[in-house]
Image (cartoon, rainbow, N blue to C red):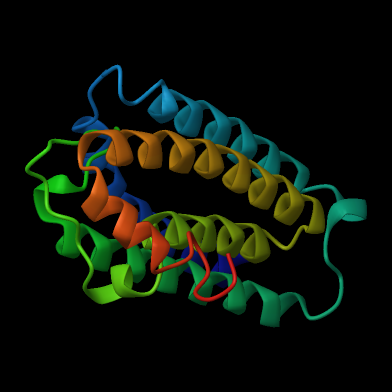
Length: 185
């Protein structure tokens, strides 16, 4: 338990540290439709439950425990690297809340050339990786379900705001790529 806990918490801190800046910059706005609060409350409850139930032996993954731990940690790192890439690609347009201005440019380079919301794909990867590293199949279900629900809501709010505010350039962008998984969804 000891070396794994140290690895897990070091990676967890590294992964989530940049997120605090994003959260601090979030503002209440009508366009956001409380999606920031939905994400914060939904994921905090899910993480609390995931960490709690990971201790119950009946809810733990027994086979390949060490392999799944390292696969989870690697998924967390990969997801965080992808989110940091998205921070760089969007620059000032990357915010914790939904904002859009008519003069805002639609970013089509980097990960945005493959999917419309790579940042949310990355966040889901991080959450799934965390659940795998915890070693609980129930934690996997809880964090994956919560992630899909909260980011699904955010995507609908964000796409509505961008379509309304930016218009045709964003419509073109949407028609050329899937939401979260290249060529699939």
